[in-house]
Image 1: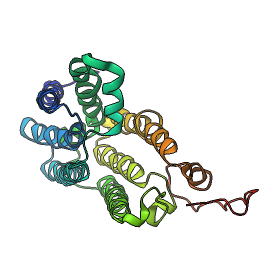
Image 2 (image 1 turned 90 degrees about the vertical axis):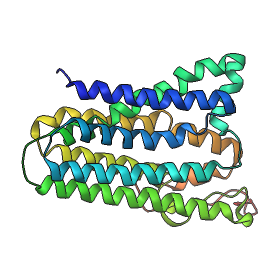
Image 3 (image 1 turned 90 degrees about the horizontal axis):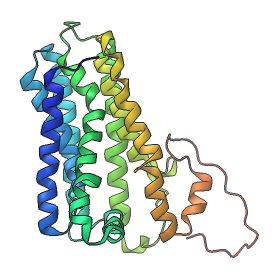
Length: 272
């Protein structure tokens, strides 16, 4: 398979965005803003694709709108979440482990690596926007948009519920197990995964785009096996012992009814 030139232009655009982010991180000695650039990178790719391709206009508008709404919301939330809190513990740990060389290695280990990942995940978006056929919106567009909407609700509501929980001083040190978090330990990750499967289904309206399934598969792999669930839970287990009990009764990803909590040997155990 030979990719059209605009795919490579999008990869370059994503790398330039992350490269600028790296320069800012060196000046500020803080790489946390890369999380906000993640969402904006997809928005950039969507707009570059729109300007460089002549796909079916209504489908282009649908994908452009969905991606822009998602990316801008996520970026704004990441900026709001990190304000005044210093460098994210994940990146601070990497900085300590790399020592004085982190300013340079972060270009590849943090910024350009994320540029490559977001470009791969956005392949389904690019393929869908470039598709000229079918020249009508159909059932796959509707199904994909529906999946996107459900995923967007899970991600945005999950983020809002967690932010509200953390804003209450009475919850300091406690485990969030309310709302959507009662049914999934990571409803926001589940939502992000689902909405990108929705983008893939929209692009699948042109059957030749089946190859772009690599996009949602890559995101699912990242969230379940790499920087999503495993890294997040490693940090939470270290900080909150009660999180282990939360793991025992709550689905890791796909929302499901919580399992019954088994009685402990010590009836006076503090369950937070």
